[in-house]
Image 1 (tube, helix red, strand yellow):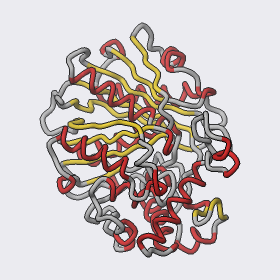
Image 2 (cartoon, rainbow, N blue to C red):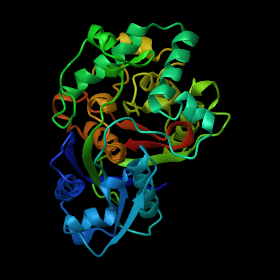
Image 3 (spheres, rainbow, N blue to C red):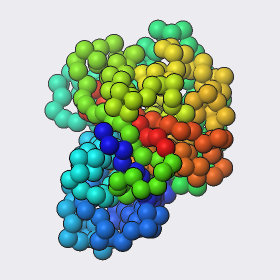
Length: 371
């Protein structure tokens, strides 16, 4: 594919904002992206929006409230991968020469409680509670710990690392560091996952402006892959995660790079077990070694493969529709040397984002960014 440059970045802090409408948060992200891109609204050819909670409203309503009218607006609902999917579709249109610039906006105003998987489901899934994501990921965690002989305290270290990174991110939902003891002592949600091993429920918005490359050496999307999980890939609780591995192979091939070239990763860590699983599936860590790499500090800022450097879903937060774009923004900042206190030194040349929506019933996206 032809590279697509990330021209501008904008984000509204993630957290709980009971007094703010979705459009207010999206407006902050939109105009932040336009300002850093140095573009006026009328320079945008098309807008791609990612959001999934109905109460958040539609993309057209959000854009109108931000004062942007007249351009084409597409609404994408791919659960947690909504704005990552929107980004790929925008890149496809630009790369194909159909448009010159696109605005991608992810936003969400979340309700309370757990998100359930997409319906319809079999009655057995509902009776077992298997349509709740914590239950699905708890099964993954139990199988992973048993299969590879790992311990609960190693799993807790993922949360500790993510919260340490999030403490350096002014836009993160959770900015207080934590300890292994605190993680393990927090209330049990679905064994072995405690509350501090589950991402917070967050509101927020994130936006990027995409266009044809104009500035050599700036971060651009150079490869991508998206798809849905097959029945075979969902076997054994998805451990190892064959689905993400398939998408990674396709994205690397499009980008003409390999896992050894990647210097920073953003993975969809809605629960602590997800980070090691997905690092392994991306080919960045040997199978079964994700937790030992975390324990050795190899996924920290000064490690071999810095991961979720902004805190990830575990600390930055998870306003579902905004997560994919927020991941991309962090990788772009790292590659462009603009990540502030959490900047990797020297800035990496290649980064990868992995985003999954809806678990075994949804879709996933892997995006490769290079400068």
